[in-house]
Image: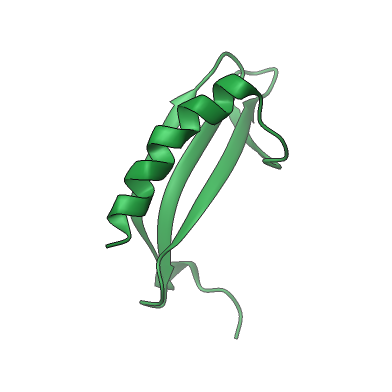
Amino acid sequence: MPYDKSLDKQLFSESVEFETTRLTVSVFSYNDGTPKIQIARENKNRDGEWQFAKLGRMVKAEAEAVLPLLKKAVESLD
């Protein structure tokens, strides 16, 4: 069965922005299934618009900023 965006429910989302990067921690439940945490990265392009990028590695400042968001996301899983 192909992915159906209408079945994907966002239960939590919070972002932290840096100079050229934004990290978003979210909790989604697909088709009323088990809620799962997602971490996404977006980078600013030359026009100043956000564009999806592979998360890959994080520098220390990014990891420290994401930790409190992850804690909130985990609490929302209850």
